[in-house]
Image (cartoon, rainbow, N blue to C red):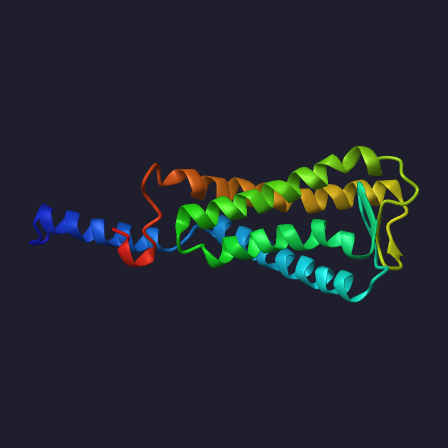
Length: 173
């Protein structure tokens, strides 16, 4: 053991394991990145909906005109913003981001029957997806990262167990 006792060896490994646990896994970082990018997209879309009284918004099942579109763009984005802001309080932030990711993954998957053979599926202003095959791929391409983010944030929500994880980073052990 080169002069090192097994006690100091265990202490060294314990300290390295603590240091490793401070860094979130790559999947969690990618999930947070996706969530933040989509939050900015939906906040920007909310600003456009708010500024234009007759804004045409067609996202799968929802086809609205005007500020009614804020219910589908702004409300989930605010839940996502709260989740990112409360990420340091692990369970609360992760639960909010789980709700955000689950909402959008279920929303995207619920659009599959609608876009399956639709002539026109997703429209934002003058840009519309008009090919069903492209629409199906778009739905799956958008749903997959939300599903993965929901899995990642769900693991973070339920990993710490009851009563653990809400202390914040200053009180972590």
